[in-house]
Amino acid sequence: MFCMAALLSALMIVRLYCLAEYDDKTAAVLSGQYSRCADVMSRSGFVFDRNGFLISHTQSGMAAIVDPTAVGDKDRDKIAEALSENGQASFSEIISKLEERAPFTVSLEKAPDGLSDAEGIYLFPLYEQEHGSFLRHVFGYRDGDGNGRSGIYEKYGGVLSDLGGSVYYTYTSDAAGNIRGPDGFTVSNDGYAEEGEYDSGLLLTIDKAIQETVDEVCEEKLDMGAVVICDVNTGELLAVSSRPLYDDENIALSLESDRGELINRAFSRYTPGSVFKSVVAAAALEYDMELYGFEYECTGSLDVSGQIFRCHDHSGHGVQSMCEAYANSCNTYFISLAFEIGLDTIYQTARKMGLGDAYAIDGLFVSGAVLPENKPVYPPAYLANISFGQGDLMVSPIDILNVTCICSANRKHSFSLVKGIRMGEVYEEYEKKEPQKVLSDETAAKMCEMMRECAESGTGRSACAESVDVGVKTATAQSGQFRDGQELLHRWVAGVFPIDEPKYALVVLCDGNGEGSASPGEIFGEIAERVWKIDSGKGRK
Image (cartoon, rainbow, N blue to C red; front, top):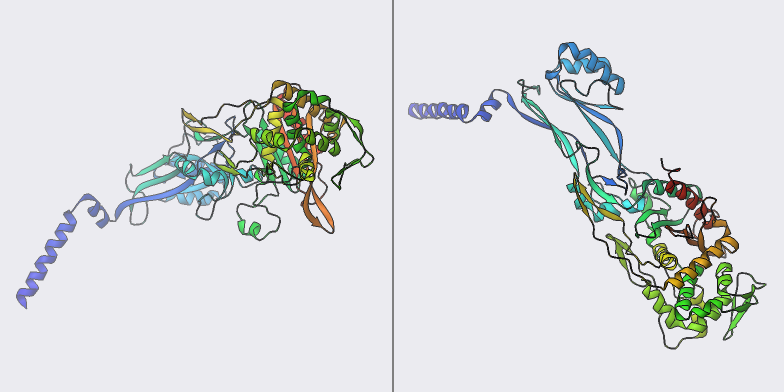
């Protein structure tokens, strides 16, 4: 037993010696000294508009990381006063923390004057992710773990994660958590705040000022529907707004709602109604330019193989040319015009315009238009319905935006929403397809004449703006849905401005399921007026 006890004692002495001499880290721990790390703040990757304005985050103040061991006694009161005046901690609380040797962080409303060069003070901006109405359905939302579940946040989640950043500090600590040693504290900025202002991030084609304008008008005048606007010459989407909005911090509320807040109506299909007459008119002009002079006398109704089709003016429009019928949205004229050219001509023109295929705009899915079946034999009423945008037709506002661009400027674009990625001085621009000509220049010129006439003397007068001349096409489409015995009607206005040299294409959809009596013409006119002021430099904030 004595020998056993002696052996155990010897082994214990050897073990303690080995622990004491093992390495510097073990020795530091045994002495109560070791390294600590604290995360202070982090952010996902930035998203910018086409002009480089930050749109995914807002700066919500500043954060001051304080190393008490580096703050001199003569500066202590000055620093405590500056931090307390701009934050929520009191002067005495700051003094108490400064007298200790443990590092701490203070949230501030703004950067205190005179502290940017102070020893022991590290200032960083605080960023808060955008949660408001701005570009809500395009940004999408994230789940509780920060993973994107829709929109940009889902499709570009990996990119935004790589472009994110964080701030943390490390220090050599004693057992009480205090900084040990004069060089024991280090602050690390891992891509959180760049040397230049917002150096890295995802660049969209969205124009912040135009998107804010669209959102403001929609907030006031559009309960349910969508507005989209693009640059006619590039196909870049400048604003996309869908209503109603949803709260991205309370998705469960929208899942329980019957208003479909999570639906991006800008990318969803609706019955087009008379905005489809632009396709029919373009098809007729491509078929035979002489049809621009085709006349028909509207009496208010038309019997098609025993089925009566009525014009919105039950008393009739009288004798109409194509331009007059387009401006007045005369159904019976377009039925007669459709019989002149046939279903196949309309179908083929729609396909050339890109209607009928589902596609993605930089990763965001858009439902493909539903076109009528191109039957060799069909009932006359089938073609009559198609001629003014009813029957087997479904299109999205994006589809109508595309049709409007083609009819006004003869350019078929692959719409874009993302310009590229910027990482400091390196900019990777996403490749874009060259626009295609679909119609003849003469057809496009005639379509502009008709859109102008519709705005100046036809059904689109409410869409006119004071500062810029517009050209539009209007529609009131049957939905097949009823409320209190009344059929719900979807109302559209699609057009361009300035009409003499189109630069912007704009589509407004008022969903018939919405509350109130939103006027797509008034919405179009106000947005066109305000966007034109932005274009001239008078309306940009």
